[in-house]
Length: 259
Image (cartoon, rainbow, N blue to C red):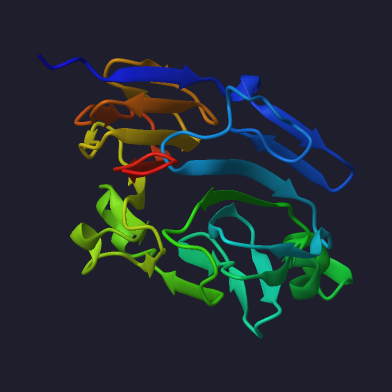
């Protein structure tokens, strides 16, 4: 006897929040000093942070270990530098993955100050916050070599459908922009077009996050920017938007602790 999927709607305003002079961060799950034993993960997804960083500021060099970190920029640009010698500028439509592995140090800064040059008309043009979503999943095995990958996928997003952005699943081996070291997880993005529904993949665990705009999900109803739905027990639901939306969907075929 089959059971219906469970849909758990999490509203944007209910997220945990960190606000300091240069950072406005909203956490979908426990993060940093925010700890809730009932809200540590969904499926394999442990972090879904919605960050806004002011120009000329950012996260100074800090360590990570045994984590697959995917960063997706929505507005502005972000400079990445790490202890393995990798560096890059991340902007909307460019996918980025960092494998922390046995240990890595990195920094993330809003690079608009660098582009601006600090003076005149151009400084005002480029002096803007960067907004990005950063997501963490555990790797299949600890202690691997650290790594970094980024790739432009803006053209693929023009279709309006779900585009595999980061995946360790064999099913997307020929389609993913970047690879993550978890064979049970895949991240998709859709820049949804008005009136054109998107069908969610069928998986034991799904995390649907409305990054920009507004949409409606079958079985959950209207979703505003920052809202999320945690789905357990199967997908296949339709998403639709009347005005346009950018949606991030994690498809997961296991939960923490094993498949």
